[in-house]
Length: 263
Image (cartoon, rainbow, N blue to C red):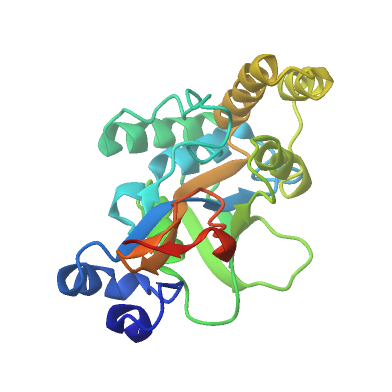
């Protein structure tokens, strides 16, 4: 960061999140934050109880308070700007107040057969062996707040089987398809509607016709919640105002051959 601020360098990826506010104050125009391909989330194991029941997955997804976490709250799976501007897919409850969502989460869990006589118990696997992330702590607290009989225990990553796992997913290229494939590959999710829409999208060669099929597939998955989205990530760069050719982009790719000096 010091090299960019001093003018020795034109660009740097050294822009820690905790320093963003201070850097913006000290050097207006240097900090460049843009949406990225990263989705932070929790993966539900749809192949075994309790998460083979969509009601349980939906209940936990809607009870999470995303707004108190630092990055952009995610109410979908595909980051904005990825799927040919087809960004209409969202959790159906995304506009409801948190209190109403938690009441509905309680109703869904009770409908699924859980309660004081049959507690909902599962393990939340966190990334790494260090102290739990803010997202893990928030999720554990929010899910326990649904009812006294919701019991969430933490575990470190490493086990081959999991109930619910903290994770992050970034597509290797700018397209919605990899995010939807993650529902299958990382959660074991399948449904006739979802599978049919993906098959139609895969058979469609026209990008404009393919995009709404992917958006519909995303909506079908959101309605079943194999993944609990948490937040969309962001790229953070420092770029000297005199550096020409630097452009924010969702892939966070910056080719030095396009750089120049403003005159």
